[in-house]
Picture 1 (cartoon, rainbow over the protein chains, first blue to last red):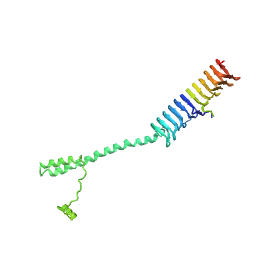
Picture 2: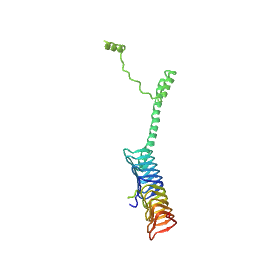
Picture 3: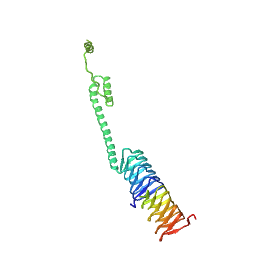
Picture 4: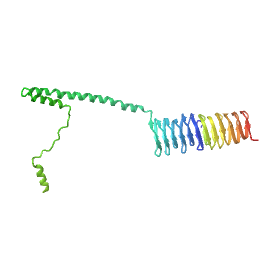
Length: 192
Length: 104
């Protein structure tokens, strides 16, 4: 019991509170609160300053940062304007908060996600140039065959394959081939 | 149970204003004002002016005390500062250094 402190509803503290054990605030504290144990800001309690403790439970209002080495719990009726950082953060329904929330102490999860990202990308870049080179090597054979017949036509054929590899176009659309006049015939049938 | 308790492990640097009973068992540096009873526990160290309806001191206090009702220094209590009160008792075993004003 001696380790537990209470700031009653009719009490206002202007200044900092620091110590061991637990603290319950039902009144007002205008200053920073640093405790080794638990801090409870009860209903009607108000703290304007940073709170740092092992566990922080808020049902009143806090204007300042909350830092819990074990956890922070915002219960119904809590109003917090400030940042929260703790390994475990609980925000109950009916609690209001404006600020950043950070669950610290689980850094292993964040690191695992980052490492595979850069490893995959270089592999895809390396594969592409190899595929592009092959079609370029093949055309000269065709050129050699065409050359004896017409000297003028040969360069034209030779140029075409060079352009081909970079422009990777999708295959031309396949149109259903209808006979000449088939469209008109169909239209007529429908009209009749 | 008292309305406000500054527990044994707690240190307060600043002013405390209250309209309910205040019990100090820890450390206080600043000022303590209450419209109800104030009690300074045996293990506490207080460097503050204290004003309350009645003030009871069992710990170490440095500062002026004023109470419209009464001020009591318990055995083992130690006060360095002036006292202004209608009634004032110093128990056997208590130590006190300061002036007393009982408004005679």
